[in-house]
Figure 1 (cartoon, rainbow, N blue to C red):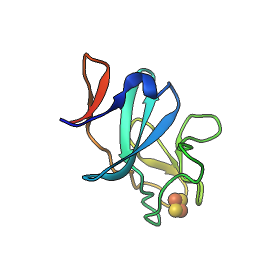
Figure 2: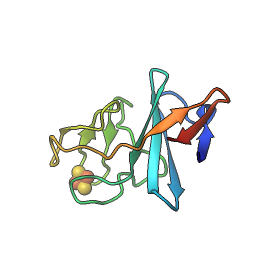
Figure 3: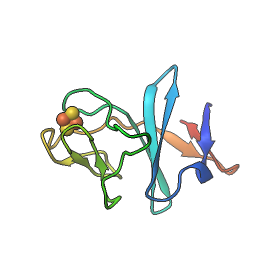
Length: 106
Ligand code: FES
């Protein structure tokens, strides 16, 4: 299993981008102590979500936001709840948190 990072690397309501040969770019965010990972591709135009480094969340840090046209996605499901790709979803990446505090690709 591939270790991506430690849980401490991703503070609550923040996100971090990663790049692996197998998956390309993706990001992990933490919400209420749980970690969620998605491919860094907006379902609207298939572009990367962020313009500024690691800026995947909206101003209130409530939703994942695409920087290009402002689509909002639920953190827990990746579903678009506002914007041009309403009803579509980010592609989830299965991860597991292990007892060593590491986050691994499942
Ligand atoms: S490219 Fe993401 S909302 Fe348009």
